[in-house]
Length: 174
Image (tube, rainbow, N blue to C red):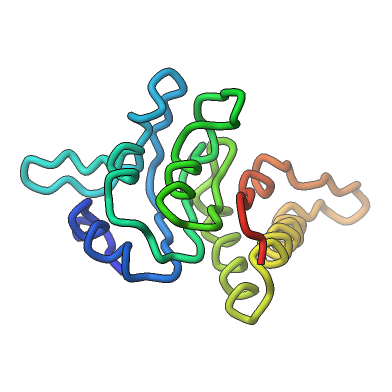
């Protein structure tokens, strides 16, 4: 696991082929016009800008990871073609990951951290990827209900789906 300035493209290239789960919590840069330039922002190092592009992902050794989690804004977006979305999610699937968790829109950092922690608790307890994601979403809604609890006598509002429904699982659900 690398964090901050150690989370470089070189570190990713070294660690990614060896891990069964890859989790990247960073910023996503999505280009629908030039999907090969869509990227995840890692730490720059020397002459390297730190951008892990779709092209980089596709030219690296195959992944052995059973799942890649892209905990960043809009990582499920890309150019829409007759074959589906061309972008980061497809790049990781082509690179060998049978499952990719991505977001469909900009995500809130605090709610995403909470949801990802709940996702991994459920997943590591033995639940399937899809069941773990569903559990995490339900727990996030419940957590937000407590945060948004109205004063006594007022009607509660439901948490906005933009805060809990951004992530989806693509590929193998088990």
